[in-house]
Image (cartoon, rainbow, N blue to C red; front, side, top):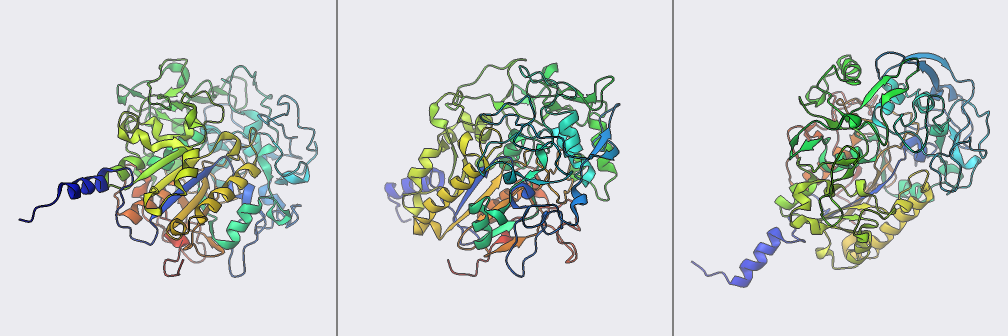
Length: 571
């Protein structure tokens, strides 16, 4: 037997287990960078985008809801918002009443430098009932109000696919009753019609995202996977699944204050009993006696197809459906848990980092503000630093793969072979594009900067796909089709842009996608299996009819993003 030098054995071990191990790919793409902004629906950003010739698109402009100048179009009524009534048990499809005569004047809730408790005087009080162009009233880059984006609220806003209760839910329910120190109350939710705002690329808004759509590929049927906000959707981006309350690593019962109860309080119209950023977060959705569970399950049973895994609700499990922070500090220190600590206990379900490590594929998760070392920096989004929720990462060697965004700026200049095969970028809060404390323009500029840095390394660029998306839609209106997959979603459409030398130039992809599609792309490229038996990366690719490419015939189904690329073209 030929003797193998010790140095070769060490190199072999490093190849398999080291930080920069690589394996063969099924496409020319050897690096995937996922850049995540916050809180924009497809219509909020691309609602008036006009694609190149021979391409079609589904948006406000193509449907005649608005004209190219942002004014109401001949089909403006298709987006009209309605009032409703829900005075008994929670339902995702409340009883519809009359349409609004005019949109209630928007508020500037959460907007940097603006008052939250009075209507935003920058917007008129008599706007038409439908979508409005934000930049007809404020400058591009101005801070505007933050629409409601929570789990039970979004189910009602979408209203079975009619998309006509965004304003009513914001006005009647808002972010829920448990939100001290701000005194929300029935009829005092500080929302108005802000959810109906959109940007207009035809008049100069979002210049980077327009340029990317013209020169690379976008998807107009990509969705947030879970109804609601940031934490659940970032977690789905990494797991294709939802997390749950744990006690010593096993499912447990959370404190009573943290259990959702969206049933309306007595003598109110849809004012939830327990919900909010300092209240309800968990739902035991397999138990139909739990408030909120029966209504959604009844809706799923009426679908013309079967929900995935019968709704994906395991017995005796309290799933987290709203926002919480991880129970580890950025340094990996366990944080104290308790009824007054809105922290998700350490999670044990598999995430994409676990699968990549097991396969010897290198990865990193870059988060803006992480170098602060403690979860106190307002620029650091702990709930966006997704692997920090997991015991497997925070108590093992993979913890070193969670790094500050500044390290990306260093890594992207290095030799292509030393750059991680898969990387995620969660921005600084002020650059995330989140309405309120950030602006859409900030993320537009960050996306341009990240792409420019990758292109400045030609050897890296020619083997890279940059996938730019958003965690969720932020409660903004969207006119697109929604496929109801299980108890948890899908939710509204959000943008997805594929930037790569192999991306189809100017292409608009109509395939049905959500965050699990990014997992499927990574898995197909590196020959990885689905993360678990219940994760959505198990779903088949859609089969469609040419007459309606947006609705899979084999529902529920999710694509793998491969249709956005042409791997025969030369980089």
